[in-house]
Length: 288
Image 1 (cartoon, rainbow, N blue to C red):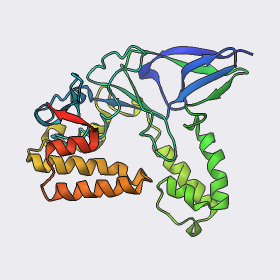
Image 2 (image 1 turned 180 degrees about the horizontal axis):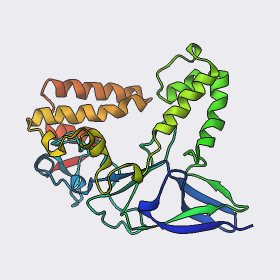
Image 3 (image 1 turned 120 degrees about the vertical axis):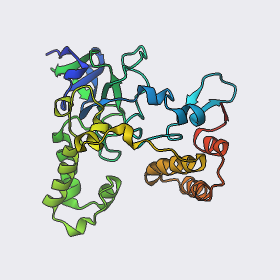
Image 4 (image 1 turned 60 degrees about the vertical axis):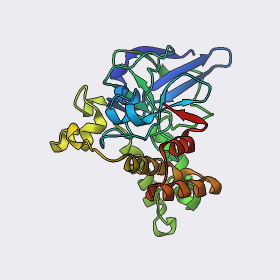
């Protein structure tokens, strides 16, 4: 029995859809990107360094190259700019097309890294091929089965961890709990509840409005532009270093953690220059 796919518009995507990445008819395998959440995103201008601070402070070049790049964290002027812009550089269409100002961000789900890894962006009217019926083909995600294809996958994997009370798996999932304080049923319920919290799609949000901004400000009656802040360069550098710190708990490299703490301490003392910051987080670069 052969597989079946169909083409829809990106704005029709919803949780449980499986976006087709490639199909190998000879090996009878289909690689998919499992949709876990779909949101509106307004990040194109941010990525291009549109605001005053980013144009002034965030630009750099890798030595020997002409292309101007922008540091992800430096020069943010408001609370709405991080982290919803982070993965949306170009449309996921194989052509690296430019994204519209308000576009669609799609996230998969992996229990260790949550919904942040593997995100992709689409323009809302862009065609997307999804799997309808796998037939007798084998379906898998990136790197074997890096992402959960469904809630059933989550339950199937974590039922064993919960029953055996494997502490290290819950530590990797960043739950911050002692498994001995809970029954196996409670542990599984915690995981399922967390997984459900990542599931969302466009129909739940105001159309063509940045979902992150709306959650943080719009639904509370606050205008995002009212959160703009004017701070010194030293404070911007410190804020940027602290934002990078969100990734530090995921590192196993003690030397890298020690180096980050050294940079953070220097930034707190106001002694970290913009060039030093750029080189610490972007490598061998020069300022523009």
